[in-house]
Each structure stands twice: as C-alpha cells, then as structure tokens.
Image (cartoon, rainbow, N blue to C red):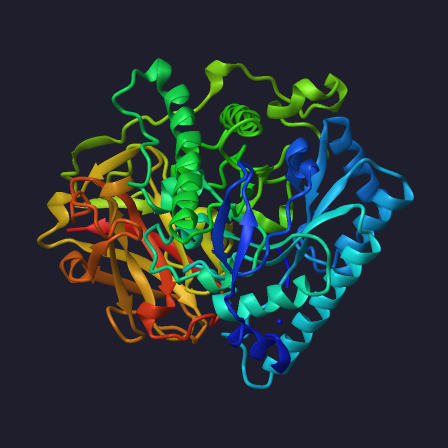
Length: 594
C-alpha cells in the first residue's frame, strides 16, 4: 500500500538504461554456488528475521498534509510497539517530517528499535511538461535524504527500500522497472545496507490478472525481494484467486476454514515469487513479505462485511506468526512485516488495518501483549468471527415500481427486501457520500444523497448495494426503466447502471450517459429527471473487474445485488487518466419502473 510523494535526473536515467547485468558467483548456505546476473548480494542482518516487524506511520488526523507530527507522538508510538515486542519497523519514505524524526527519536531515547527505511519515488507519467522537472527534483532529493539517513543512523537502519508499489499494473504511481533500477542503483552505490524495492507479489511472480511488466531489471539490482500480499483485497478484486467463501464447509467451521485458506493464499503468493526467482537463476535472493494484513473493520463495502472483523484479523495475525516462526528454521520469507501498527484516518476507506486504533488502544489481535487498561472497548470470542453467508435470491418483484431511495411512498411500490447501503468502489476509497438537504429541492424534497468523488487514477464509483441478498428484477427486463433525479456540474459523461451477481458471478451493467440523453443535463444548478430503458443499459454489460475469465459472470436480472450504480471510469467516458474530477453529484428519487 502506498504512502507519500516526483523522475530521476539524467545521470540516473542513463544509469537505468546502461545497467550491466554481469554474472557473479554468490555463495549458498550449503557451500555450493549459484550463478546470478546482477549485483553481489549483501546479506540481510540476522535481526531482520529475529525481530517482529510492522509498518509504521504516525499520522492521527484526517489530513496528513497539514498534521504536525511531534517527537512525543512518535515516542509514544514506539514505546507501545516495543512493549509488545515489535522492534523492527518499516518506514515508507525518507522525509524529515516522519522518517528523520522517527530515527532521531530512536537514537535520542536509546530505543531497541531497528528500521527498514523507505525512499518514496514519484512517477512523472501523468505529470505535465511543466511539472516534470519538479518530479525529478523531488526524486533526487528523496534519494539524497535516504542515503543521508542510512549513513547517519547506520546501526539502526538495517535495509533501504527504494520505491513502493511502482511496477505493478494497477499502480497509481507507475515507474518502469528500468527507471526504478536506476533509482535503486543510485541509492545502493552510496549506502552499505542491503537495498530493495517494495511491490505487489504479482509483479515479482509475473502472475495475477494484470498484464504485469517484466520486473527483471529491478530484480537484477536488489539484495532481496520485498513483496506485498493482500489476500483480503484479492478476494474482492480477483474473486477466483482463492476460495474465501468455503461454502462446502459447515457454517460452524467456515470462519476457521476461510482464515486457513487466507494464509494459504499468502503462502501461495510467496511460493509464486520464489518459483519465479528460482527460474531466473535467483535462488539465492531472499524474500521478505514487506506488507500483509487484515482489516478489523469494514469500510462499507458489502464484500468486506463478510471478512473484516477484529476476530478475523487476529486469526490471520496468529497464522502469520506461526508461518513466520516456521520460516526461521526452514524455507519461507526471512521476515513478515505486518501492515500496519496504527490506524490512519486520512486513508478513509483504506483504514482500520492497525494493531492499534487511532486512539492507540490495542486491538483484539494483540491484547494478550498488553494490560487491559490499554485495550480498545469491546470484547470478543472466536465465535464472533465472520464468514461467508451465501447470497439469498429473493422471489421475482411483480410490482410496477421498485424504489431504492426516496422519502415519498408511492402506492403499489415495493422496496428492497433488506436495507440497501451506499458503497464506494475500491473498498470505499474512491468516493464519500452523505445525506444533505438539497437546494433547490428535488422532486423528493427533504433530503438527497450527495457524492464527492475521491478518484483513483482510473476514476471512481458508488453503488447502492444489497449486503446479503439479491433481488429478482427480471420482470423489468423488457419494458423497465431505471429512474433518478440528479443535480451536478459534473463534466462530460457519467456512467449509470447496476450490477448483477456477486464475487465470481459479478457482472457490470453501466451505460455511459452524456448530457442531453434520457433527460440528463449538468451545469445549470437544476435538478433533472433521468429515465433510461433497462434494455439500453444492458447493451453495455461486461464481466466485472477481476472476472474476465469467469464463466459465471453473466447478465442475470434474477440476481441484482447493486440495483443502482453511478461511476466515472475515465477510460470508458473518454477522460484522461488521473483526471481527478471531484465535482459533487446529488442524487435522489431512485427507482426501477415498468
């Protein structure tokens, strides 16, 4: 997961292009030799394996850019971590605000804490010509800071990681392996510690659903691989990757089976990376799991509601610890860095991964390490663990109107069998919403739902979803319409539709709506009534993201799980990547009719 902040200067770019992949002999633990292309590997300190590791970031507010981080705050955090035995921390950058301060606190207080230092590299892929020099200048300065910190705190900094999730296909901050190799080499040539880059397992393994780049230029110049594995997120974005549902297991045992399968999936990620490195002749290259974790609290995403819970988080954490202990005496990662130490509210939908909540109260998974006075409120038992409950398909809706969001009650209408919830795409990260009193009033006057996009590089989306059931709207297929009121200044096209199925059967049905179509207009400060035939929306149906090869991802109005979706995927609506359109949209009076 990415943290803060721009491309290398000419010398580094030239170095990236001109890296000589020479052959060296590296001694193996068994006394033999392995032929490797690239650098002579610097061994990881034994302390990397001996210490419990966790990612650390000190931010406590909803805006990290304006937050002032103090030495006292960092000292409080590190004291808590040391108290629980977490004495190896990963830092994401080399900023003065966080990393220099953290290292200084460790030094000044003689804390028993070691550091995996980061150097956060910025991409210039989406930068304007005018901004590219600033990106290059930032990257130069960040590398210089990393080198300076690695030297000044040499006994504390055990390794340096240059870049974070830059190569993987879905990166919002993409840097090519060739350019990243130049950055890595620039830092490595000036420090004594082992150097790596952190990235998703799929790019190192050349696996996953994306068209992953060949990472070998970067792999050739690192001393170890630091891979990320987020099986919770993968279970949502790549539904067929591992069997999280465990429907063949009884309900009483399903949570245990799911969490066993979760760690097995993380181990499979590791094994895929190990196999790829071995195939490349890199069997001597160690692997660290630089990030993995489990959410304690769902972000509003219906899929997360079956998984994210403090007990499930503890189950994953305990299984990771068992794997880590076994790896110290056999094959496996040299270290597993848990993500993360403390919750960070600025992450919004991507928050709630911490060992501690933002109030620095210990979560259930680590409460055995702390006195009860330091626990967060609430008590749990193993029986509280969440597990998958198959979606229940309700009977056909026979009424002429199926109302999703409206205050006024229309005679003869029906509403969803269960309460629907607003859910932003990408685990709640790409938009936020709230009920507002509209001005001017809509046709349903007292309240409306206001959406504020927080776009990813590719855009954003928000759905009105049924958490555990699916409604049968097949009677609306022939003559039905999807209706809603909208008021916005949003530019260009916007996508409107619905989703059928769930998991591997999820199927997108979204029409790109232009101003002037079906009653839609924007920019005049007025409400507009939109009515789109279901038959027209269906023409734009497609397998949901991650389901491209799923045979069960098909159009199915008998299983509508998201009866209303509004989105803007820039590639679909003709906008440039990273358009970052945050114009608010107000929606009201949403219903299907026939």
